[in-house]
Image (cartoon, rainbow, N blue to C red; front, side):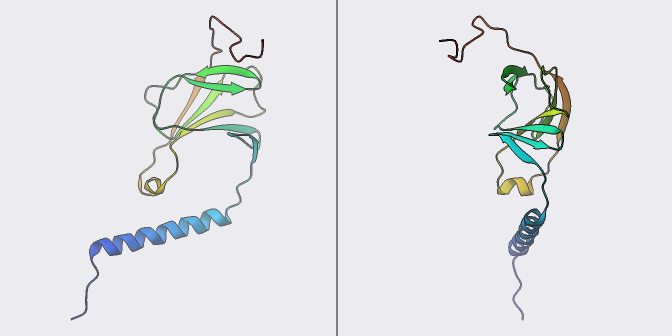
Length: 137
């Protein structure tokens, strides 16, 4: 009688095949874009600010073109969240998008993803001390 492979080995080999196929696809993909700062990427006229977070929290501080802003995250937001920022004093030619996402890992390949999209109006923080970064010393 031929030996039968356990079901978990069949599932594991299917997952391995899917991971290898995804890796091959990403290796051959032509991802056009350029890095403009540590966590900022320009794709055509749009700029994406990439933030790795563990959970959705509000507000999120953002610095753009030498100015600080606070970004309100809608209460129904989930990760990954793509938030188009309105109210920026010196916006890029296209849109300025804050991307909130989890750190990538193996579980991300198995977890279903529901992307959250919204446009939010940013605010400049108003505090007691407007220059708290030490530049005025």
